[in-house]
Length: 316
Image 1 (cartoon, one colour):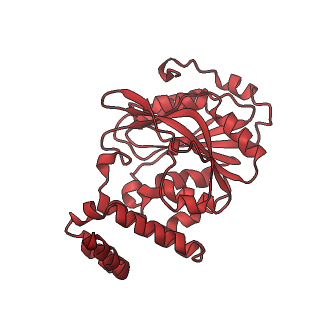
Image 2 (tube, rainbow, N blue to C red):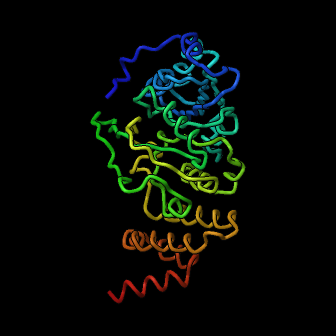
Image 3 (cartoon, rainbow, N blue to C red):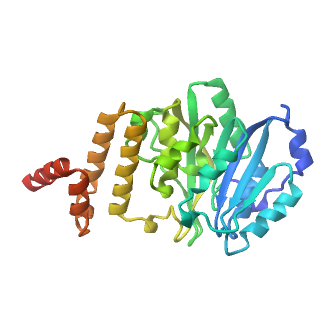
């Protein structure tokens, strides 16, 4: 696998010269949200700039008022690549105000496609963008592509390939996405034709990725490419770290997102949504009920279905 630390970057002039298509039209917008990523963000930026494409791309990178030197590292690369990297430096942290990180960047993107990679993750293949664009331009019914990824444990620096769950399936629809999150953020490229205002209808910013998948599924297929082009870095205390979540809170958010999706789709997928919610309750039944608020929450939101689930469990 490529060693991102030893990648030799081309100059901005050399990158632009390789773009066979007109550089006046941005084809891919790379969006990168950062917060206190000074240990990692250089790897992410280098993995963007090493991309070999015959089309133009821009890098939209947003620092949410980090308290470390993340902004300084970004600025160093902006000075060398001023026509490719577009920085956004927040003077106050926006996340604590409830402002979702990625939708801010989506709304500013100019490309036909958007590729996502957060500041503590990175890509490991210089052909990633080109291959995803080539596939999507040859398959117009495809709204989003994603691929497999490595996981790097920051504390031990160990790395392993994430299990490929999609050997028997390549294409996914809204009915699949409703079942739950299964796409790693740093692997995604999607068509830039989403109504991003829908994000405001959902309550939970930490589940923005799944919301994006749901919205994309209304536009076309989500397609898995069986290649390993990225690294997801598991960082202690990050928002995506397993230790940052609890089963009860996750289930409440899961239900809220599906309820909102049910409304904005005029209940077209209502049966699938209700089945997904009950499957989630069933699979997390015991961990949920160890929390003293668990019974109360679900009896309030889904009283009859929850009572039915409890009775079935008691009969076993």
